[in-house]
Amino acid sequence: MFDRVSVSLPPIGLAIALAISASLVPASAGKAYAADPVTASEPSIQFQEAQAHSAKAYSFAPGGPVTVPFRPRAGDSALVDGAAAVALPASRASGVEAPNLARPATVAPNATLTVLRRAVFGFLPYWQLGSTLNYDTLSTIAYFGILLNVDMVGNDPTNDGALSRSGSGWNGWVGSTMTTVINNAHAHGTRVVLTIESFAWDSGGIAAQQHLLTTPAASLRAAQQMAAEVGRRGADGVNLDFEPIAPGQYSNFVTFTRLVRTELDKVHSGYELTFDATGRPNTYDLANLTAPGAADAAFIMGYDFRGGHPATTGSIDPLISPTAYDLTNAVDAFRALAPASKIILGL
Image (cartoon, rainbow, N blue to C red; front, top):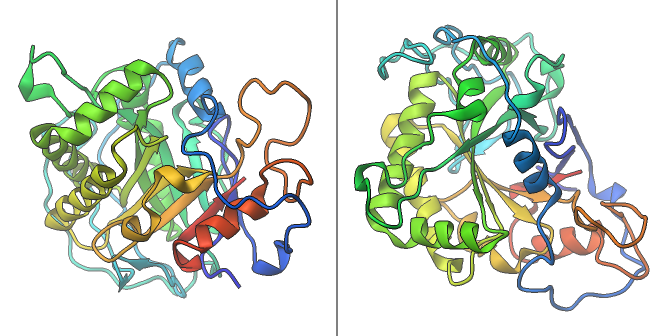
């Protein structure tokens, strides 16, 4: 049985996750895939959705500080960097004030909340803020998302790798609706993590990601600002949406992920760190990315197996296909490289 495998919708709308078990993933009767392509064939659906919404204007009222700290619900079996879940601090700053990482006293787990048997991980894009959420059935909500600034020509080195603090993604994150989401999530023992976006589906995205992962100052600034923002906002961790991993960055992404973990731990121990991976895992060093000191789990983007512009009609996430790469192939490939307890299957 998969200890930590769950399914969720992609960030084209509100993403709600449901846990599954190995009994729901039968052995594939379809084509055997001995080796996956090095990269996916075309831009992902979630990348196309992010681009489409970035061209639209969204208005968010400024938010106040998060006042409810995260308290792990009874039965929370999630391991964060190999340790049991712990209470995390609320923020004492609003979305527009200077950082203030003062920590409240440790709080005890709430014994009255719904017990979840699996990680149930859902994406909440900024363009779906205001949707009704069932917090009792969610272990983690990943806010989608914020970009990183990349300065490859040296115009402003102090901004290289910094969080992009403008646009709808940032405004939604620091807005009043998101403050309410985080407070309500924490009241139900649900984590809220910040998704950081780095898309390498075109030449510009590839160059930007390569620069970020090969420039130590930019990598460190990015990791430090992610960690500081999680602490300032009163959130509970980071989700790295680096898709796919740019050519030549297989090992550098591991180094970066470990750096993010180090910086998170400097702010507070117990912050959750996950990364998103395409269904074909060859650009991700899964063994090292899920090793101690790195990420807690890999999120398989299992909803994009036909791409955003498929030539023929069919499922974007087939369980079993006689002719094409399917979910069973993907789960088998990931389980061969990482423990099942560190795999989350997104649908």
